[in-house]
Length: 114
Image 1: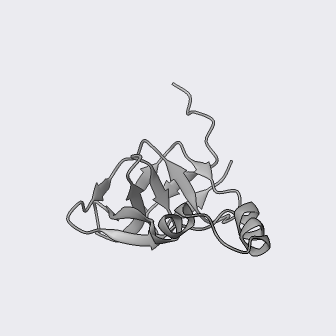
Image 2 (image 1 turned 120 degrees about the vertical axis):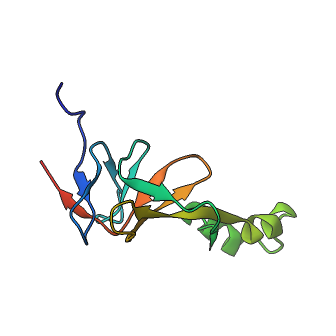
């Protein structure tokens, strides 16, 4: 069976174990990938990583023009994205994070491109 049209095959940088055969490369951060189906990965659901939500560029310009921000702006800036760390099952190297929408975001991988 042929492989799906993937942007890369992802491997652990420490032990070279294959982690993902079907992923999409991030448009802006070229060394990052996202995927839904992985192998040899374990999610640590006991640990929570929180990152502030990034404002959308268009919104930032709008806010500068406004004299008083709308009421929901305060809530938007306080919201955070929640992730769980993902480790290689073979050597426990942290290779990705897992989000609430069940998507893996790989950042510490060796990628082989077609």
